[in-house]
Image 1 (cartoon, rainbow, N blue to C red):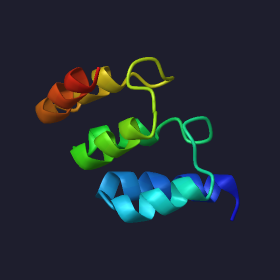
Image 2 (cartoon, one colour):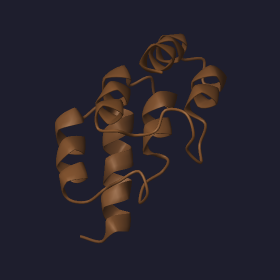
Image 3 (tube, helix red, strand yellow):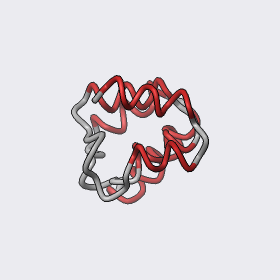
Amino acid sequence: PHVHVLGVWAGNAAKSGFETLLTRLLQLGVTEKTCPYLLCAAIEHGQEGIVRHLASRGWSLNGSEYAPLKVACVSGRAAVVKLLLELG
C-alpha cells in the first residue's frame, strides 16, 4: 500500500492503542519522517503504551514538527506529560 495509506492506518492504531498493528505498520515502512504526527496522535489520546513503544524505536520526544510535551499539556494528559519527562 501507499505510504500515505499506511500513515493513516498507523495514526488510527496509535490513537486506539493497537500496538501490534502499529508495530507491523512500522515494519512496512511508516517512519517519523513519513508520519510525523503519529507520536502526537498517541499523546492526544492518552496512549502511554504507544508513546513508550515509539520512544523505544527512537522517535523524537523533544524536537519534532509537533511538540509532544506541549500536545500532552494542552490535551490534559498529565500521565503522558510525566512519561515524556521521565523518558527525556
